[in-house]
Amino acid sequence: MGSIQVNLLLDTHIWLWWINQNDQLTPQHQDIIAQAENAYISSISCWELVMLHQRNRIELIEPLQEWVRSALQNIVCLPLTETIAIQSALLDFHHRDPADRFIISTALIHDCQLMSFDEKFVLYPELENRLIGK
Image (cartoon, rainbow, N blue to C red; front, top):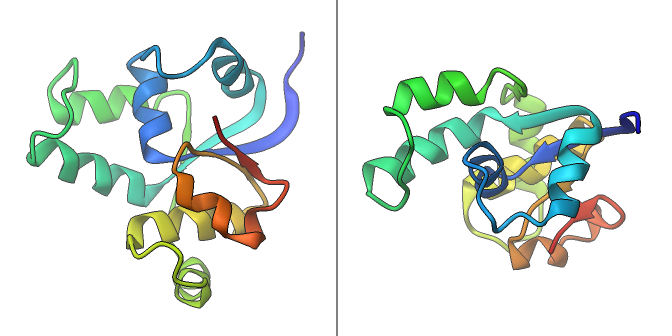
């Protein structure tokens, strides 16, 4: 089976689970990621991951910087731009977490499907037909 012709942006928790092979991702979700033409994360996910690690909210199987370096080998990290920053500020306030607003805006600006299990993401009409949830 070849790759799916889709650009796929992973939310931070999906990226973490995918790299750590966490069983919270179903085989179907794993297949979608593996078969995507292009898999991305937002650079804000790197920041968010470090913050979670510093607060002892996540455990990594390697030291932080090694984990990130390894985790970025098969995925492209998209930078935050002024266009993404402006788009994130223009979104309705269904979600006050700025990192998640940057992730949503990154998906919109780069015309990506967005895989996230965050229940608040469905409140954004901009993500209609883009969101891959549970």
